[in-house]
Image 1 (cartoon, rainbow, N blue to C red):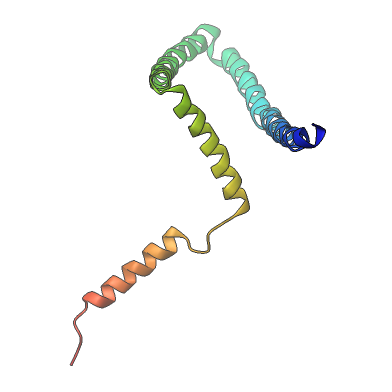
Image 2 (cartoon, rainbow, N blue to C red):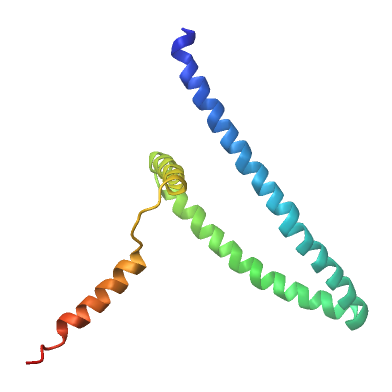
Amino acid sequence: MDYVLAPFLWLIGVLASIILWIVTQVLWILLWLVLPLVVIAFVALRIAERMLGQEKVRAWVRVRTRKYGSAASKRVQRWIFALGVVPVRVLFWFMLYAVWHSVVSLIWRPRWSPWRRAWAKRWRRQQQLQPKKT
């Protein structure tokens, strides 16, 4: 029985290590990119409150928060509705395809690029359209 379960346990271990790696990368990104921006924004807000006045700055922040908050809320509502309509099996296969596509994209790159191909076709077409000089 151990011989049968060993490959599955190995696969679960590999998947768990990949998920743990992704989580740690996201945490490091939050720590080193987002946290300094939050600190800078907090300091800038305090400086603006001292220079321009607390009520003026807080009113400006309140207006911006309402504007961007309502837009984000509407966008999230649309996404939740769209995800609620999709069957669960479709969401499962979409997630599976997304993971598969990311793994394949990390491992393999095609030799041709769409830009090079399109550019070559553009020039070839112009050469074909030009009349021959006799």
